[in-house]
Length: 166
Image (cartoon, rainbow, N blue to C red; front, side):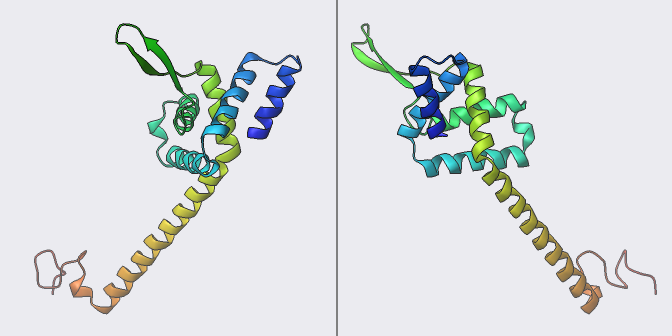
């Protein structure tokens, strides 16, 4: 991603025409590449994609997922921080600004598409492991039921209320 962003910025510097959104995404990705560690970016995207896979109701739409992905990644460094002198308070104030929503959406989509497959794979492996554990618990419960049917927590023993008639 950083190489593609650098190539886009170099093409723009040479005077090649390019959509403004694409240029802004390239600038943001280049800033992110300088500020954040690659492993942190991978982990964040994987975690967000896993969250999206497991709890899709947390995101109103795909677009909102992409914007939130970009916001989380920009937070890994000081990419979204600006500073200005506040004359009234006589100090430098930090402000947090996001680029336009269409830039954030494109950036999030590009990063989630490129790096999100890791999160999808981890979610699938995790689901498979949970299914194996659930099946093992069910098999164990069935085996214990055959050994001692009267001690099953699911069925009352004979002679007890709700048990089988004699």
